[in-house]
Image 1 (tube, rainbow, N blue to C red):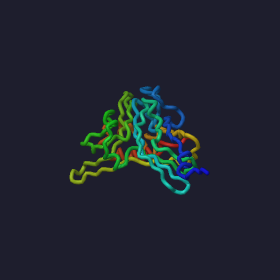
Image 2 (cartoon, rainbow, N blue to C red; image 1 turned 60 degrees about the vertical axis):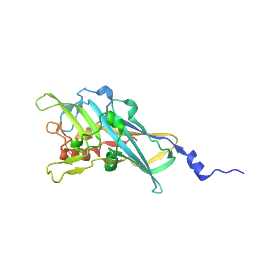
Image 3 (cartoon, rainbow, N blue to C red; image 1 turned 90 degrees about the vertical axis):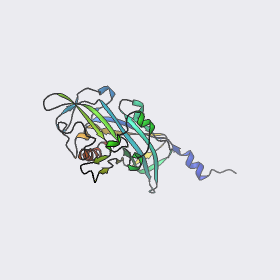
Length: 240
């Protein structure tokens, strides 16, 4: 007589899980590499702008099953709108088939991970200079906008850990990574979840973004970084 152990059953029922990131503007206009440098998007403040570069970090995918057990992967992925192959994040750890209360990921690195060393990120200039706190960018979002004088001007919406150096005796550093909860999911065979990113939300809510005031040199701007974090929590959702 032969029987399968519970461990073997679990292994049989484990499959690949991927997150596929798609990008749009105001939840309607698809944003891809083909749109680069085309001033075609309107933000909530009334400025027209283009996308020239968009890269951001995703890490620490967490699934919580019906029993409240947590499955966590320490993988990270650099999403790059200029590289279509980077938009799909396949977890290195196989996931068990079933229904989960929630699936989450982190935008950026938490404080501990941000202190690590990632040669692949260093080679693509995603690291942050020591004078700005070190670690890594969480996002590089570059483009042009038409300013209040009607001139095409640059913006560099870059996110890093916020650092406040106004008081040299009390330098304050705040990690502005944040968790995105995509909600409940059911996983069958090898599964790909579409994660939608509405890029217009970076400029919208809860902080209405005025590119005429906040456009470049945002990395050392502590309060701008805090506002970016708040706006970012409205960017991502699970496609239904």
